[in-house]
Each structure stands twice: as C-alpha cells, then as structure tokens.
Image (tube, rainbow, N blue to C red; front, side, top):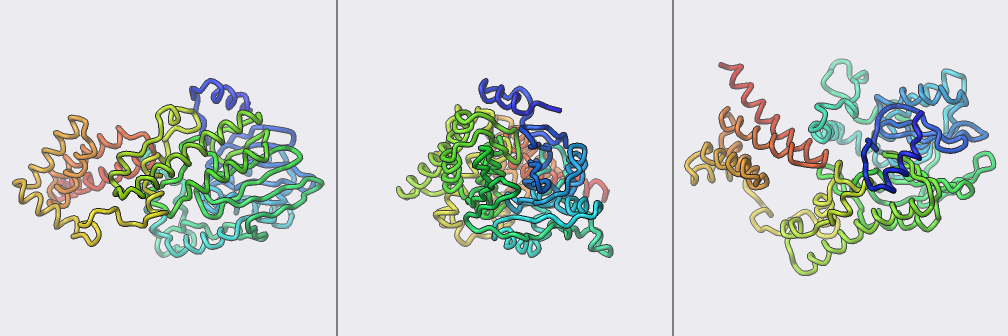
Amino acid sequence: MADLLALSTRIIDSGVADEPVNRVTHELSEVDDNLVMVESFSHVVTWKSPEGLVCFDTSAPNTGAKVVESLRTWSSDPFHSLVYTHGHIDHVGGSGAFIASNGESGNADPRVFGHRHVEHRFDRYRLTNNWNRFINQRQFGGVRGELDMLILDSKEHPKTKDVALFLPSDVAPLTDVIDDFQGITIGDERLEFHHGRGETDDHLWTWFPEKKWLASGDFVIWNFPNAGNPQKVQRWPLEWAATLRKMIAVGPELLLPAHGLPIEGKARIAMVLDDIASALEQLVTDVVQLMNQGANLIDIVHTVKVPDASLQKPYMRPLYDEPEFVVRNTWRQFGGWWDGAASRLKPSRDEEVGTELAHLAGGADVLVARAVELADAGNLRLACHLADFAGWAAPGDPDVHEARARVYEMRRKAEPSLMSKGIFRSASRESETVVKRTKDAN
C-alpha cells in the first residue's frame, strides 16, 4: 500500500516530480480514517460512512470493475452513494460495476449524485457518439499507441461490430440532481456539494466541514488545467480559478483529486490552488487585454505565455493540456470562432489552396521537400503548414506522404502535451496509410 500523502508532500515541497504522479495502478491506499483512494483512470475516492460506502467517481468503463475489486479487499459494505464529480466517461463509465456489486450481495442500488448538467451531457454523448469515439482515438493515440480506455465493446450492436457506445448503456443515471449547492447528512456527517464551471459545466466539488476533506474532482489534475482541449466543447478558465479560490476560503486540510496525488496540509493545499488559479487568471487577463486592443487570434497565441517557472511546478506541467490551447479557448469564450483573418471567414477547401500553392511552387514535391528542410532546421510549425499543403495537393502520392509522415512524427516527438502528441501522431498515420495503400496496390 503506497503512502500517497508522503509522496505528495515530498514532491510538492521539493518541487521535483521524480516519480509518476498520475498513476493507473488500481491499487488502494488509505489516506485517512475510513477514507481510501484507488488510483485508476479516474481515481475513486471512497469514504466508509455508517450507512455504507460513498464513492466519488466510478472510473472508466474498462476500469470500474477493477476499482470495485480493489475496494472489496478493504470493505464488504454496500455502496451507499456514487457522486459524479462531472460527467466525463472516465468518471461515470465504471458505475455499472458498482451497481452490479450491490446487486450481487442483495443490496439496493446506490444513490447517484450529480449536477443537473450531467444529464444534458449524457444526451449530447448519445447524439455525438461516433464523434466522441474519433476524437478520443486521436487524443490518446500519440503517447502509448491506441488506447481502448474510452472505446467500449459493441454488445448493444451485435450486427455492426464497428459501432460502439461512447456512453455505456449501464452508466447509472442520476437519482439526486444537484443545482448550485446542496448539503446532505450521511450518518452524522454533513457533506456539501458545490457546483463550479471549469473543465466542464457540470462539475461538483464536495466539502466535509467537520473532517476538513475536499473532493476536488478535476479542478486539480496534477497537470496544467485541462481548460483548452482543442477537440472538446467550451472550457471555463476564469470560472475555474474562481472555484479554486472558493476552495481556499473553506480551508481544506486534505485535498482529494480525481487525478494525481492527494495533498495534505492547509497551507500546502492553499499554495497549490493559488498557483493554479493565478496562472489561469493571468492568462485570461492577458488574452482579453489583447482582444480589447484589436489583436487577432494568431498574434495572441504567439504572445500570451505562462511563465516557465509556473509550468515547471510538479502539479502544473503541460503534459496533458497546455496554455496555448487555453488561449484559444479563452478567445472562443469571449470572441467567437473566427480568428480575425478575412480569408478564413469563408475559406476555400484545403485541397484547392494546396493545389494552387503547389502549382506556384513547382509541384507538391517541392513543397514537401521544403517542409522537411524546415523541420530538420527546427521550424516545425512552418514545416507542418507546407507538409499539409503538399499532402492536400497530392493526396495519393506516396513520396509526398512519406515525407509528410516524417515531419509530423518529428513534431509529435517535440511536443510536451498528450493532446498535441495525439493529434500530430494522427496526422502522421494519415500519411502512413497512403504510403501503405500504394505499396499494397503494387
């Protein structure tokens, strides 16, 4: 059993993450009396109340059963409540395993708490099922290969095996719908559910006033905040910061995130929350200031930065999302989708632009050769533009696409965040597919 609090304290106090902080081990660790954390994707924090086990999140579809198995080594008490910190699949997808465990022992289904927008999210997931599968394949495809973490089996669709449900059919619906705030008592303990927008619009954080515990969900993830994800719906960086400030105000002594390590100590927790909030506040302030001066999006992207000293902190590293994407999300929140370039208001197709540029340059091979030169010289941003133009101009040319794949593989290796790596790896695979198809045909 890992001493998560000792590890967390050492890493925060030293400023050096010399061990992984986001782990998927399915290992159970005690973090306080009658309180455990199972490290998974996402973690499941569980309190043994006098009325049964109260779980914060349920992990993903393919990890929920493993979490239940770990919890059953600690307690055979029935699951009294499941609290969805928000409706992302890695937080609600394993709920079926918790329901099944109660059923196997003859107990009633647990209560399921969540913000009212969770139900709206579930409706949207059903509407955009395949889109969500596609974007998660890209997002998680650049670091450890294709993950099946969020891709479910197709029991509901036996005649179409390539169709899978992004939201599993056994995800437990809400029984208790929370609005902005609600207090409840379980046993003799009061719990307070607070709503705040941040990574999502349906996020809850839970405060135990007597115990000084705070279950933060994804408001703290031991990475730079996931406030800019390029493939997902609107995030709320300024509201995220405001919620962190509310957390500081209640004075938690034990912080329980859904990703990363638990944190103990009032001053240490306040420092971490303040660092995250301050970075988000400054970023939004800088973006809006430039918007008010009439700057366009690309100029803002290349101007607004988070100081390196902040990004080097163990709980702020841009290894999942990154500040550049939060800049874009801030623009979208306050300024809409148009980036300020007149030609991109009603653009031509990429293939048309690529073909015209290739014609002017003397061929797609010339464009992609220059892309490789730029990439080798370290100018990967510009190299990718030319590689794309070449690929669009010559969609079936294996030589062009072999070079494009090389450029994007170089770009992937140079990027810090999982989101960038995944998207650039996806681009490389697109061109690799063209090369393979041509070779197979010959």
